[in-house]
Image 1 (cartoon, rainbow, N blue to C red):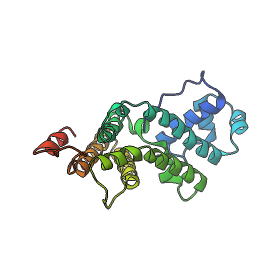
Image 2 (image 1 turned 120 degrees about the vertical axis):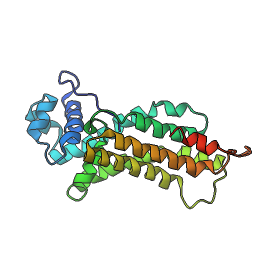
Image 3 (image 1 turned 60 degrees about the vertical axis):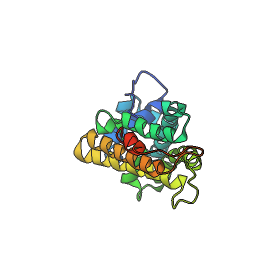
Image 4 (image 1 turned 180 degrees about the horizontal axis):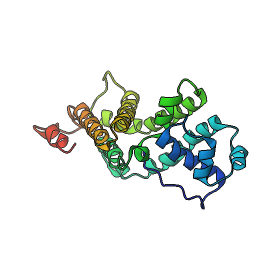
Length: 227
């Protein structure tokens, strides 16, 4: 998901500053290694302020996942890929947008919900569930465009669904983030997103839009050459 805006301790209320500090610190060093003292220093608040807003570290984790969902949802809702008329162009534009925000260090572009899930899925079920709601909730925003692209191209009896393809996009992205963390190199993540784009184009370009004569010789290859 998107790169963070580094926290300015002079701005925002204590709760927001703690949530933004959690976003940055957890993505950089993980949930277990993140201490309350470190979070409070990063947020520029006292430990008393922390306990005024959160019962414990797990409660902060749940709230951080929800805050991540809220802030990233606004980013994607205003992203330029929504401006395309063709739903397939919107879906491909989404993938291209995801590639465009893979920049800088892995801690700056990877997903907080994915990072938390990998670490706490068995030890903190409340955090896991909040992260699942974030990841799958984001995936559902892609389903209308996938369904519309399927309908426009007469894909009615496929062995896959809008929900399954939307979930697959997130599986590729989360896996790409892991590879970037493993190598310390964003290029491998961007390559994975390119492969996702190629896959989606191949999945849809075999079927013409309703009323169209078909993609024609070489159309798929031309579109894939941009991936």
